[in-house]
Image (cartoon, rainbow over all chains, first blue to last red; front, top):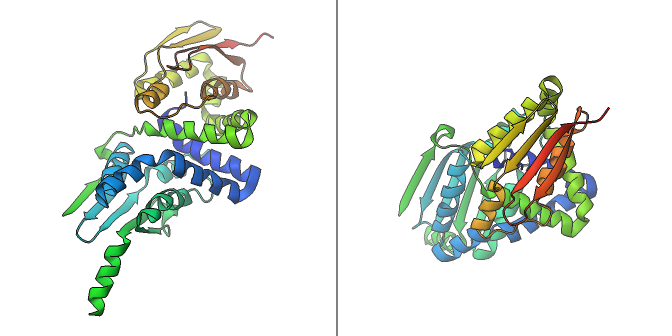
Length: 155
Length: 154
């Protein structure tokens, strides 16, 4: 058995294996597949609870992953955000000195969740500028809410 | 309503068992797109890269290094496991695989080749060492298994 505590290494090595076989398109194809076949729980939570579904989903996963984060929910504004101070996944990949992480490892977070949330009417903003230090920022906004706010600003 | 949650890494243990289901989904994908040999090739490549330090430990200390590795893994995962260690062999009996049981309990699909995360990975760990790995028994429903590591014949 590969322990779930070793999964991140297996994940990164899978991206490398797919890249060797079919380039970045093969990796992207897998991310799309994983989003469609593995993130049904995120989809269902957001359909049932709106933007609060994001809070419910990531409250579970980020705590189990022992992440170092600040998570904010503003239901009236239709906005949810995660400020990842130290990502447990990227942090592990950087700490395992005998393993070279997949170069575009963090992009899976952009692809997988965006694919679930945008069709449900949410804007997905992901700042990867500091992933080399295991930090990132994610903002999810309800699209129609943003349009309403824009309308008020214009009035 | 506004809510905020702040956590540090020290606030929680690192144990996200849904990762087992993510790996299982990945193996299903690999088999569907590239075939069963790709599943084994990927797992071999992963194990060779990731378990390099364990392999070095096996070369230095032999079978106790393997026993300690698996004892630690199953303690983290909450698995019921027993070990039989002699000078030339280590047999591991797993009553039920924590990964398989987690997926069954949460209605997640278990990859038909999920047993390769035991068989192929263990074989890869042993490559280049005086030992070989054998998966003697495996139950797909529960992941109950018997694995033997033994000294290769000269």
